[in-house]
Image 1 (cartoon, rainbow, N blue to C red):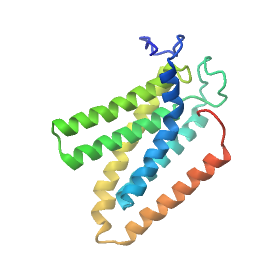
Image 2: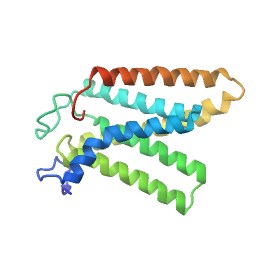
Image 3: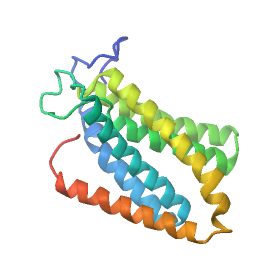
Image 4: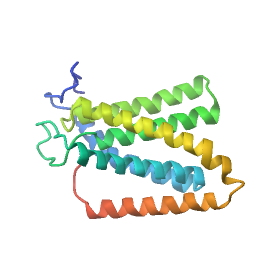
Length: 201
């Protein structure tokens, strides 16, 4: 594994084969995991969580265009902007949302804390690979992860304080969640198909 410089600048050492494979598989693994959650749970809570993940990812793309900060020179095959890292922002959202869900489901105990640590640790490692492989600067990854994590906290709070709270009294809210999910998922699939290419963004 490549060493992390104190400045968190892109690594000049060669990442291991495992690091490279893990980095390339990240977006497919994350997308597959989100799809698995939808197929397994297929309830409004799962739809809401995945819709938030798609909105968060779209927000990362929007921020990239607005900030328009170049990637590091080591990202020679990438022409799009680098701030914030879409991978890090998505990982920040998903891992934080999962950790909140684990804590809420099982309460705060050694098991839930251990599971949360594993989830967040995996996300940190996968986000770090963006620096390790030279595709992003440390700042781009850290800011992306911070935005994603903050988005997860807000999205989870809206679910608990508003959506889930009033869904029983107002059944149309459940239908609205499903419609929002279908629109977001369809838009995501259309975007992926339109921009299909080998490599990471």
